[in-house]
Length: 445
Image (tube, rainbow, N blue to C red; front, side, top):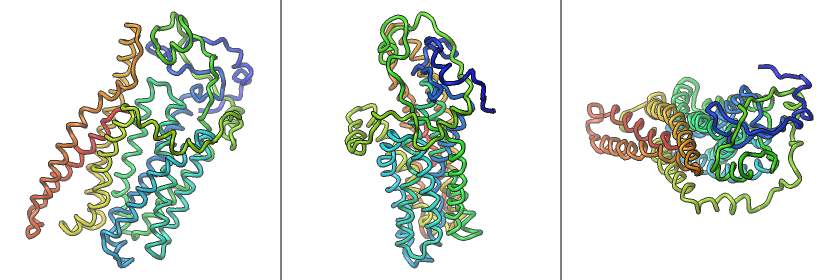
């Protein structure tokens, strides 16, 4: 995995390579077609593509870990500041709320100035705010630091999917998005497990110190090993046969008469260093920041059912399966079961981690196969394949989440406060968490 300095991969030479329709290993045309530019992320070697994928996965993982790592230690945190346990959960609430605003703020900048500087700024804010949270002397200071701790690292939540689209072809995106979502969702599941042990052995402030250390390490990794992935694809460069170019990209109504298997060209050191520069030297003058990109353009997408329905499905299930227990489980289980920080962390994290991992590992290859089969069938009938085909993977979760919620609700209702030791139904709670989370992770990418 070394960079090739050979002059054969120089940009000028690649520009003279004749344009042919590229196909995947099954003979289907690649969507989108790669350009002849060495700066095109679709032409990055596979080792670099998956390095970038690993980095954005870890950034998303840290984004949710930052928010949830303190959850099992809410009770000792509240005791130190002299506040009620419920009030102590507000620092997590504000971090979650601020995290919802981060992608709306950071994404327009990333679409104009590039992904790399925004990722670096995001993880740097995560480092500084986690350190500030650990050293807070008052609850008000902690609330401010936690708001920034949720806001900064949340850039990866919105940019991660865009980066996957930047570097992977359509038939590869299901697997890549599955890995990204696996890390994104499980960050908040691993966090309470780790945080419980840290809080017990070192104190609740060290939950934030560990988070700061991880963010600082990730900043250094991204600084040296995350090249820019934003690329303005030249129009009219790729020709298809038969028919005009628009048929291939928009309709894909006819398969090309001939195709060439795609193989990523080796990357030169010069190209790699060019893509590491800030600001991006490949940014065209036409790419400018506009105010409507912050509010009007993102929310205008809600008029499409294929956007708003998966968004609402994800939001409802994420709220019920992850946010709700994150805010209520530690105070509730401390009262009902006399759990300490470790047992609270395990009760919150283990079942969600199992359900999330199983769902993601199953859903990603299945939705990729569904999309591949749909494209073959559509091409044989001269019709385009709709991207909404992936939504068919939603049904398993649509049935699993009500079952999980019913089990969880019934378990809590049956608890007799006078007989807590003999009637606590932890297996029922764990089953609920696995079933409920599968509704989220089995949703299509």
